[in-house]
Image (cartoon, rainbow, N blue to C red):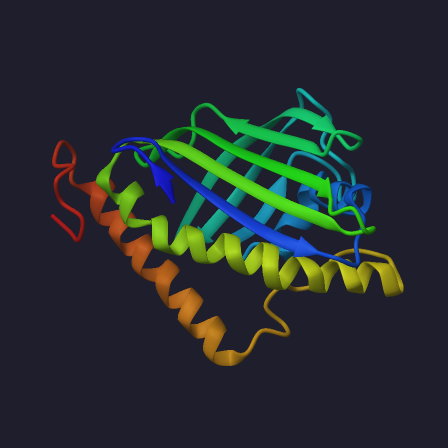
Length: 206
């Protein structure tokens, strides 16, 4: 984690030796694929399944624990260049009461041997202390996405084509329970935070 007091930045890397940069970029550029690799992502709306997001276009990603708390972020594609390995998204409004000026930047670079060195940089400006408390869960989410679930989805797509599958279907039960427990705690803290208007010093409740 590279961060200042109000603008944390998370950097996650993954080696994908059997998948080329163009293949990885093409998968990540399709928002409907995101829920298949991001444990906290519930759904994406605003673009058809299997369609990449063009520069300037936007989608709304729902994550968290809907319908109890459907947290939403509107992402806009700000750069997409497969040849240069650049894929950037921004959410100026971020998540109300939580974070703003959110950025999600992917770099899909050749490893020199037919594979991909993948990097994800996520940054945001905190609005509430709860945004800092969420860093461990966000880091876990990113690591699972890039190092575990993404390779599985890429292998599956290469073998059979079609849409991405349920991201949690093949996860060990203990890992699923542990991950969801973390997000439940974050959700509860978020609810407490937004209900305590003007009391941002509170993390666990009113």
